[in-house]
Amino acid sequence: MTQLIVLPHVELCPDGALIEAEEGVSICENLLKNAIELDHACEMSCACTTCHVIVREGFNSLETAEDIEEDLLDKAWGLEPNSRLGCQAIVGKTPLTVEIPKYSINMATEGHRK
Image (tube, rainbow, N blue to C red; front, side, top):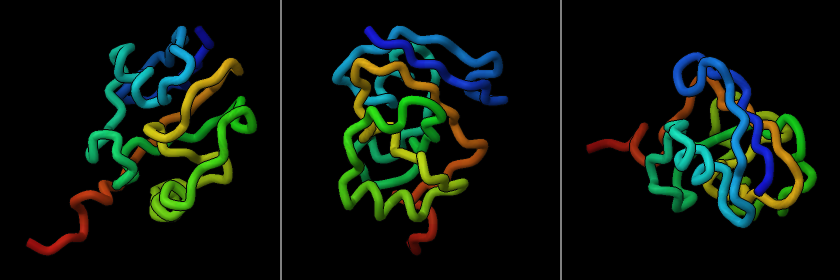
């Protein structure tokens, strides 16, 4: 198990959290398993940006993002150099500190005409 620190988020995790995260499992899945309801509109298929997180510590320990993730991240609200999609960033042995942005954009449904 690896420590995953979640910085306070007014709606999803007001007091922040310290999680014993499962290695080999995405940040998103680890948050959901610990009752932190990170949006994941595309069901973690790397097709939207609702699970966007900012990795404040431990970013360099993560595998490099694939091109499809990078393309989606370019459309995420509040993008920073250490942003990742929570569904694609896999927890390893290094502790991580993550921040959940205040807003998210649902690339799976927003902006599409019906």
